[in-house]
Length: 302
Image (cartoon, rainbow, N blue to C red; front, side):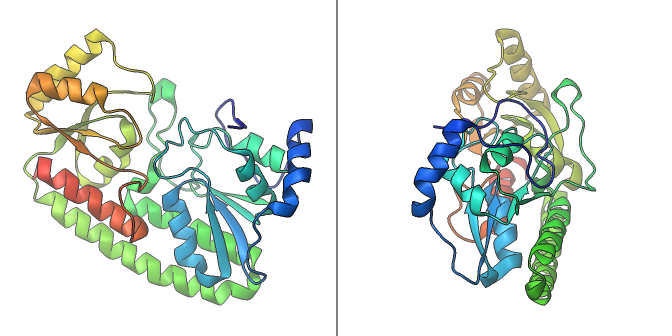
């Protein structure tokens, strides 16, 4: 794999700097073989599958969308491939979540050296959850109302980049936002009837969901993905699971469930997979993903 990242931070808009020599050579060799979009379609790169779905729903037939981090991988640890640098070198838009999720974004933009590229930060205007030393929690799309803000940013960016399609983008966005409003109301109504409001999850992916829908993230197994809990932390997690009367621990398909399984074994509860990115949902995009996760939660919390 070709690693383009090495620290956290936003990419900003446009392009800065020149390609490293190795990347430049790679691009020269591979440009002719790079897949081309249909002549009448704009190429858009999106960092994660939910954002890619937003672009597809708003852009419709006027866009070709490349997803950089596949749903089965974690954006916290994913290393981009050289072919993906080439994809971004052809793209008109790079749609990111930001809030530190795409730690590789700035170097990707530099390596792609695409003067036409606009970086679309979909987190602008969203109320973030500060997690102290870890910074702000990046999982904003798991609150449907905040996903609606992200869709608005996608719409506006598509209009800027392709004014000829402005009416199409605005109409598609209006329809999709109406669908998301109904989804938000549906989830709120379902969660309101659950008897259990506290939960333990693998990492803090569900903090925004909890804030929006009246749940409490009582504890997480890994504050930072890849850092397994110490024996003392495991003991506290076991105590928390027992204290809140949890019937399940929420893990994620993008990470190992080993720690969650160990704690579940000690407490006699189940491990339930919640998917923040869509690796377990084949059709239906973001809306189906959210309904899938709410159904998974309901089995443990209602």
